[in-house]
Image (cartoon, rainbow, N blue to C red):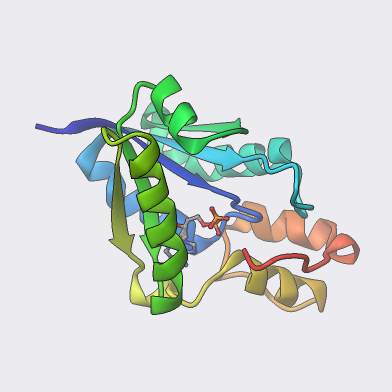
Length: 169
Ligand code: ADP
């Protein structure tokens, strides 16, 4: 039996080939994946949530209707419930991800025991890719192709001068 819907939440500021890899590899196991772009009022993202949603929609167009991209604010578990889902999808790169991801998963379990977090181990080739590194490379005019989808690379180039590395996403 296929679990119906998984929510893949994140900042996606910007969306990278690592994020794309998680979606591609998880999709065979779910009927639908909802990419949840977090709108965090305490963070100063490089791209607005509307811009992030738009870029991810373009990248995920190839998956058809099975991948939907939405932005949300507030508690992740509330968003997951509002979408009729019970699975949260997250990616794990290095051991350093484990502490934060573990805290997040356990907190969400505390809040909604019925919701489970599924982790996919990053593919080796993209396991070093992070949004913050991508922003740093772009800030200094470096080539980000191969790290992010073409649509994202274009948008990064378009606002190179605006790139400020503000957090550790
Ligand atoms: P958040 O701010 O919620 O951590 P991110 O956009 O940084 O949002 O990441 C969203 C999810 O994608 C996280 O579970 C993160 O570990 C995972 N992720 C990020 N980069 C990669 C990658 N290169 N390979 C696999 N998973 C990744």
